[in-house]
Length: 156
Image (tube, rainbow, N blue to C red):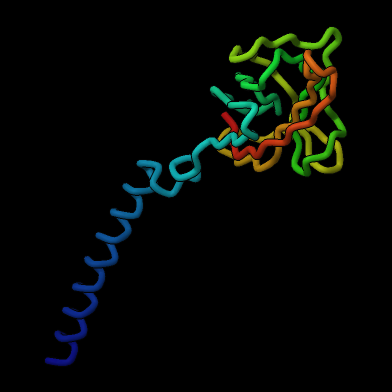
């Protein structure tokens, strides 16, 4: 009889402990503690001549970005690209080019692509890790340039 009572107390004590742990885990999950969006911050890192003022990636695969240029001369942005492998394939060309003065910014929408050329269409909360490519021509020298920046964006 004493062994049965001891076993019952053991099961009751651990049963309550398991119930409390389950309630705490449920509350944390409901509060978004285990969500990737809680821990991943949007990240847009460009070379010194450009800055991402802000940007967001929609579930339709369009990355809307506000770029500020700080080159030594006005520029014409001829193409923008967003993909997972930093290649100039699948870039959006601008004709006429986007003219941007020194220190000014421009907001544009550009579709993002996977390596195989399919559009990046994902549900909100998905994490995109890729690259932003900027083709531009320096107005003073006439030389074309390609800048590549890194992106980590949570789909909104």
